[in-house]
Length: 538
Image (tube, rainbow, N blue to C red; front, top):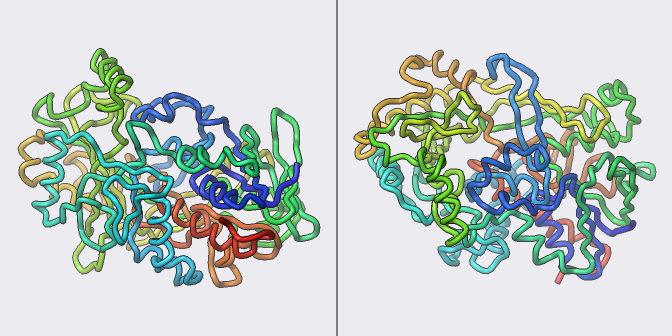
């Protein structure tokens, strides 16, 4: 098989690129995904997320090396292994990030990545329920809706933020630096998940010049000297070669893209030699610079059963909610994982919000590994500093392409990060004391009043913390020679090979990463098409 472009990975970035590149009928495009097609019914059902995240058939599970910041435990970072990638298994909150995030990326790379271009990308691919404005799109392929349920506890959660002085924003993605709270947009339309596969591949796969290949794990990029000429994949236990006449584009995400590069001979020479991998280019920063949002879950017991959704997702009420969903496309099963978001400052003197919270009208039974909800009424919030300065790493330990790479998160390595983490918890405790929410809360149950001092709060992060599922930076883009890819996304030291996904972000966006990934991939397509071998895209 031969193509002009081979895209490795059908997640948020890969699906956008496949859509954009295949718009030109003269370009032959292949999109390769390790997992199956996204046909499982729980993928399209928003609250089916709980079941999908327990299904190893649709997941990559990366385990961390135990370290002090995870209380000596190994932590699981899960990614989608299915058409649509993690956009098929995520919580569906649609968060753009702040304009300053992309200007910071541009400062480290080129003007191609500043807010002017990224904002235009958002407007181009959005089809937003709130309608089009100067800063929001309404005619693109990605359908975005607002929450349909407005529960008393949820309204109280928003009101508590207002009592803190936070702006109640009708569109929390409005491009400003306000401290704010509000009902958050979702990648949901008519009760169904709008993954990148649903939004971009469904209309594109009708094109004869786009070939989608599932159940094929990309092992390595093939080179003629230092020029990429194709990829080798594993399919049903056998190796297949797929040829690229122009470029190979890696879109595996922050966890998989450095692994593909290392198996292909691009990485630290000593590390590759120890694994018996022939060196193509010495690039010691491959797999380094990993950045993740370190979150902590806070929970509160509520005063009344009816305030919480804990009982809704169990027993006969769950059956009723499921029936309602299939009959109407609405109800509790049609909601995103979290439907209210807040952006706030962890301490005075900051010029923009540096922490995010997502809050929901239910609470997890932590003893079950968050697979079930508590018996008593409760609510939970996950909160995390937005711009951590600590850096981790991820590397392969074997040449087996089906073995997920292990990693070291290296959370809270800097004093700045520790101050932000402690500050976030203290702000949330102040938030929970605001009317009318305070009158609905019986007590804080997680981490609880025993974790009060700065040291105790850091201990709570170590013991009860969670990853944000937002890892970036492991194939850093930059204008400096040490960066893995240059500002045009080209892998340094070789030809015909690019990377575009969260791994290239030298700065982590201020919030969930699905939206920024799609926007950067949309802009990345513009850059790639500058060098296209055929006519410009239509």
